[in-house]
Image (cartoon, rainbow, N blue to C red; front, side, top):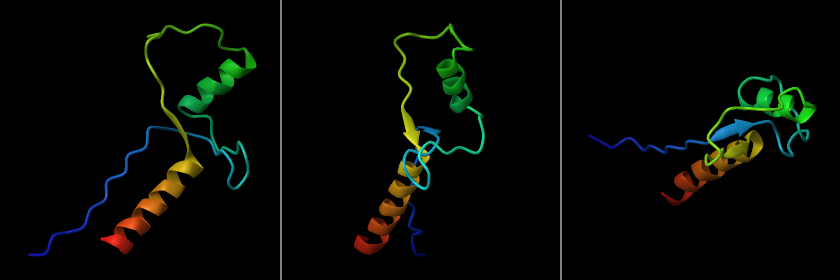
Length: 78
């Protein structure tokens, strides 16, 4: 039986677009996007959280470009 090729890519917290197709474009305010918008507008002024924590945000266009590149590399170079 042949082995099935598998490529596992797991992005961190995905946020709106950085550059492509339009800088800053988003279609919803779910998840961390709503929190970032609320904090940026001054609606959310305080938050109970672990100050030693780190949120690793990744723009969606960077994530998709990375998926495409990793898939191409996997197929082209085995």
